[in-house]
Amino acid sequence: MPWYELDGELWQIEQIGKQLEITSGGKTSVRTFLTPEQAGAQSQRLVAEREAVGFRPRVRDPRHRDLEHAIAADPEVPASYSVFADWLQSQGDVRGHVMAIAIAAEASGDDKAFPRALKKHVHDLLGPLAAYATSAKGDPDVFGWRFGVIHRAYLHADRQKPIDGVLDQLLSHASGRFLVELSLSSTDRIQEAIDLLVARAPTSLRTLRLWAVTNAKLAALWPAMPQLRRLALNGRGLELGPLSLPALERFELVDSQMRAASGRVLARAPFPVLEQLRIDFGHAYLTGDATIDDVFELLARKDLPALRQLALVHTRYPREVVMELAESPMSRQLEHLDLSYDELTDVNATELARRRANFPRLLSLDVTGNRLSEAGLQSIREVAPTVRSLKQEL
Image 1 (tube, one colour):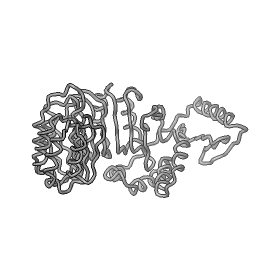
Image 2 (image 1 turned 60 degrees about the vertical axis):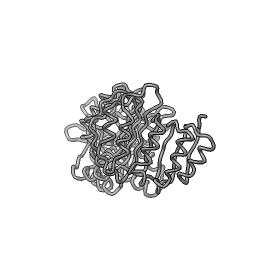
Image 3 (image 1 turned 90 degrees about the vertical axis):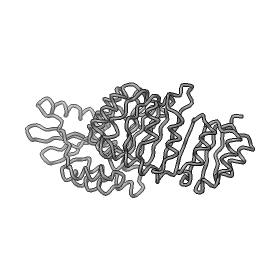
């Protein structure tokens, strides 16, 4: 609950069931009522009385640059959060207490302690963000918590309106300061949200997902988040711009109207530590103006030493993809290959099986949604120990 302040005098009231805890002059008193409703009504009256004489909520957001930088540098481990939580407690900030509860609860496997603390201190931990915290049926949770702060956020432009305004509040709030995963969905005001993210990208951000977006201009994002590890883009006509993400480990691009410039970016962008790459041209009839030659240029590269998982989906050029892939320098390092919905036939399966020796590390192959008979599937099973082959269209 917030502190109220007037000329340096602090006052706080907090309802716990039928009780009110009132702190004034450094002392706390407890008053008990017959029902929670009576306690709540009295709390409102007391707050109104204080506000009438000039008390106002005290804005508390103590900052410590070095401790915050330590968290942003390694946002997936608890150690730096623990140090920051201790410091916040020394500043009288209840968020430090809640962070300590969350860190201890995760370490012990207690999945109830933090939700209780969040419910009790929702004003301090969410404030105005509480209005957006309820997810629609079937949607992921709007906010996912870890270590007592918002670790991941899912904002849908049709649910949290306007999406750029909600994102602004999230990035401005103390609980959103160490955001690690962000998903933005739908097109309405998505460019405004992207522009805001360019200006305000938290240095702790490691995962970005954009879903169902159209004609978004993304070039300015990449210099703003060089620490990004995981990137998923799903939409139409996306303008990637020069893509330089030296720490990127996983990249997924689904674009049913892929631009020629995007194809060239995929073929030539530096990916020194990329482990997983998925390119999906979508199933729409309008396929954009990217060409399969860009894919072939990508397959010819010798500077992707960490790549182990590759997905080429909806390429519509089965023979050429099989032949180029089999001769690709990366074929010898791949462990997982996805050729879903590529219109593969038994002939393509036979060609791939004949070149099995070119894939010495391959552990799994996905050929879902192709045109393979049982004979073709038998050939495919020679290529990898594990084969996924659902929904063949004969």
